[in-house]
Image (cartoon, rainbow, N blue to C red; front, side, top):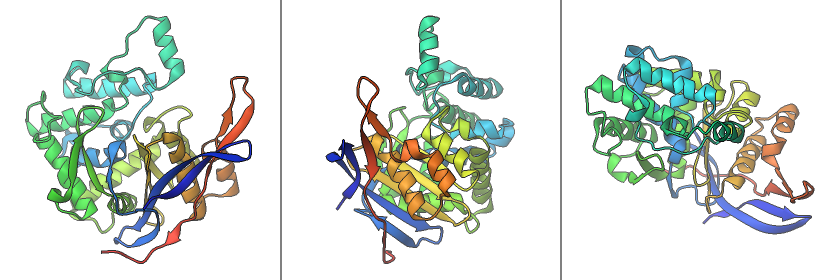
Length: 340
C-alpha cells in the first residue's frame, strides 16, 4: 500500500500528509528501490511525452520535416505557453504545411502568468498554440502527414499515430499491449496506464538505451534525450521545475512530470529510471519527492541541492507574505528484492 511521502507543516506541526509510491529501476529491468505500492497501475499522463515522440523520429518524419533539437524537445514538453514556446510550435506547423487549426488539443491560458497577463492586457484570446501539449500534437501531426494518414483523427486510439505510440510504450515497458489500460488525456489523445515500476523501466531505457533494439528505436531515443538535455527550456519553461531541474543537473538528469502527481526521472550516467506517483494527485507533493529521491540516491551536490531548495522544501506563506509553514519530503527509499 501507499506510504506517507510528503508532509505539510503549519509552524512545526503536521497539518496534512500526501501518500505515494516510488519505483527505481535499472535499464536491465532490476528493481533497485521502492516505496509504497510500486507495482500499482498508473496513468502515465504527460510523463509519456518522450515516448509519444519516439515514432516521430523512428518513422523518419522528423528527418523528412527537418525537425530541430528544439522542436523535438518541445514535442516532449508540457510548455508554459511563453513566446519562446509558441514560436517553435508555429515553426513546426509551418514546415509540415499545417496550421494551428489542425491541432486537436484544445485551448487554455498559458501557464506562465506574466505572459498570460500581457495577453489579457492586449485582449488576445488563448488558443490551441498556448496549450501545454501543442508541441506534442504538432509532432503527431508531422507523423500523420508522413504516414499519409488522416490528420483530422490523429488523436483517436485506433489511428496509426496512436498505435505506434502504444507499440513503443509496450516495447520499452516489456509488457503486452493488451496489458495496458487506456484513457483519454486532458489534451484529447489516448493515455496509457501501466505498473509504476514499468514506467520507471521506461525511463531507465530512455536514460540508457544501449541495449534497446531495434537500432532505429535506440537512435530515436538518443536523439530525444539529447534534445531534452540541450533544450530544457522547452520541457516546461521559465522558473518551472522540469526546466530548472535539468538545468541544475547539467546533463545528468532527464525529467518529465505529468498531471495527477506523476513524476519521472532518468539518470543517463547510471542507467536508472525513477517513477513517482502521489496518491491524491496533488502536484505540490511531486517536486519535493523528486528532489528527495535524487538526494537519497546521492545525485545532488550541496550546491545543486541548494539551487533546488524552493522545490525540495517549498515554504507556505500567508496573505501578508509571512512564512507560516513548509512542504517537506517524509520518506526513506527501501532496497527491494527484484520482481518478475
